Length: 190
Image 1 (tube, rainbow, N blue to C red):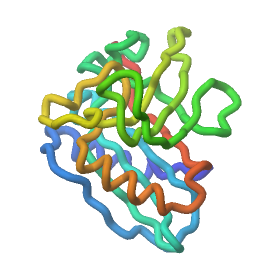
Image 2 (spheres, rainbow, N blue to C red):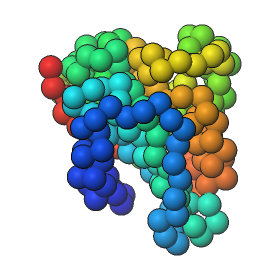
Image 3 (cartoon, rainbow, N blue to C red):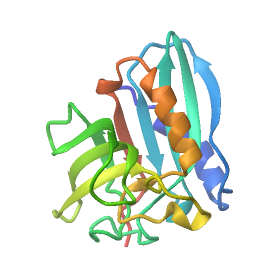
Image 4 (cartoon, rainbow, N blue to C red):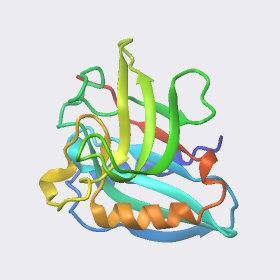
């Protein structure tokens, strides 16, 4: 598994020292690769709701880096706090045998009204404290409206609706999307 997060972590850490504006995604070509999608969630220790989701998506033989603002939790930095803390660090994939996590993209039409529309379901993840976090997703504000305060979640990764639509469209065209994965970086902190 090729992890690019470390290469961009230093540059992103400098960017995240100030609050990120509520703006749509950016996309740039990073090379000629044919690889399954890789998402990296880089936690902003100073402001959890101003963190960043970076996706590497190969379409044809061109790989794109897509960056967007993302939040996780309600501002609580303790990953062990169910329904409030941010997403636990680690890898979420369909091939991770050490946990119950996975990386599944689908159009969710039922359940929690906020977690609807195109989502990336992440399964369950054991925290550093030993408790199991469940019902984890990358999602937006369901199918309703959006405001900057909507980066709060019950522990999922939340992105705005414009970014979700663009990311879904690129992901749907990507190389081997069923083999994609998410890496979460930062500190579990308290």
